[in-house]
Image (cartoon, rainbow, N blue to C red; front, side):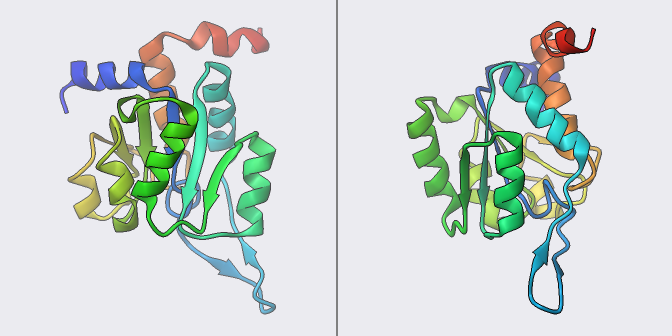
Length: 175
């Protein structure tokens, strides 16, 4: 994608929709002997989500897996649109944008595998992580430099903030 087109898409984003495993986490699944699932989230991704919300971007999660850890993290970050255990992510995205009253063109989606293609193919801006399969990297508008679970979400959010020249608003609380 050429830079002017990417810049235009970044400035149009009103909602950021994230997959979880492989995007907000490194994709590995951790289970205790009792079957309890643990997820590891990067703090910079979480802070980036808060910054995106501060500049008026609705952040949502659409995940194929359901877990108490994910519900807790979403609640901790103030993510009210958390669709989990979703089989048809394209249909879930369509429902979400209707709920939010926005267009697909105003939606950025970040996913990392074939289950995410129905969302990625519909979004105004499709993004994947550096360690996504080549098939996915070839089909999106932009690929992060960082792998999933290691600050890739924050990398995208920083790019959106830069495109909107919104750092003064973001940094106002830190002066």
